[in-house]
Picture 1 (cartoon, rainbow, N blue to C red):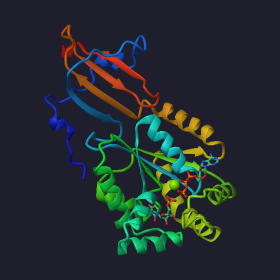
Picture 2: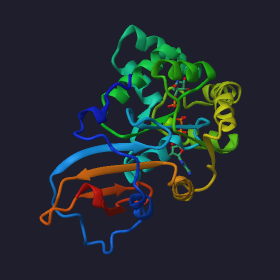
Picture 3: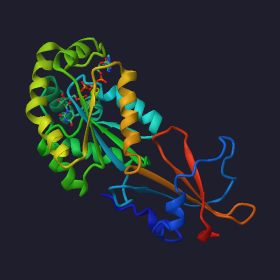
Picture 4: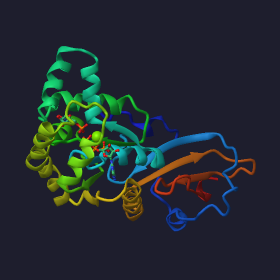
Length: 279
Ligand SMILES: Nc1ncnc2c1ncn2[C@@H]1O[C@H](COP(=O)(O)OP(=O)(O)OP(=O)(O)O)[C@@H](O)[C@H]1O
Ligand SMILES: O=c1ccn([C@@H]2O[C@H](COP(=O)(O)O)[C@@H](O)[C@H]2O)c(=O)[nH]1
Ligand SMILES: [Mg+2]
């Protein structure tokens, strides 16, 4: 699946960071106005901790029904430049398309059960492949160990990060009953079933990724703003392990070459590092 080797498109293979790069990688731009000079783009690639650079950075966003996954994903997407792939929305789109498969999915969602892995994984695969994003949030998937295994088998990869929104049941029920978006599963009978499925099938996935040090639990009981602050803190605490985007830019008017390192956790923040060995 991840055969788009960006590096193959590039004129030079990126070398390991030099000691100069290591030392200066956190130099901040001196002033907000001092932007990199207008340069011709020589190469652009993304270096992702935990991945081989051939695929986007993948974060699974998990949590019970109504824990606020969709709400927080929208914010993460707009502030940190992630594409937001909601497994539930992909399935609802299938229902809207009016196919036989859509009818089966509708029935499963109405009963709060889990759609077969081959359907969901394929929809997610297509959504990721058709996106040009370098960072993707997968909202509400995997729903069970079988989903997880199917995804990892098909893509040959694990997520780079798992965010788990932890919320008590009574609060989730209150939020769902107040959602008012006309969802067929936002009624108390289906909500009770979804909560059972969450405990028995979703939580083992969270526990699996916790045991591998990938899942990060966020208290999802406050306001949406308070929860997003916790997300922001998580991203900050992980920044050195997370995403490093590097643009290699061709020389400016003085013949210097620059590497611009964009670090998503602070929106708009960028760092400029001159790399002598590229001059
Ligand atoms: N922190 C919050 N405080 C109060 N209401 C919230 C909060 N976060 C989300 N909501 C509201 O709760 C409802 C459910 O939120 P959301 O759709 O984000 O949850 P979800 O985890 O994606 O649920 P589902 O699994 O059913 O898709 C929405 O109406 C949303 O506006
Ligand atoms: O990976 C998935 C995601 C969702 N479902 C089904 O859809 C509903 C609604 O999902 P939300 O993420 O809450 O929007 C869910 O209850 C499941 O029935 C799924 O089967 N697999
Ligand atoms: Mg949702």
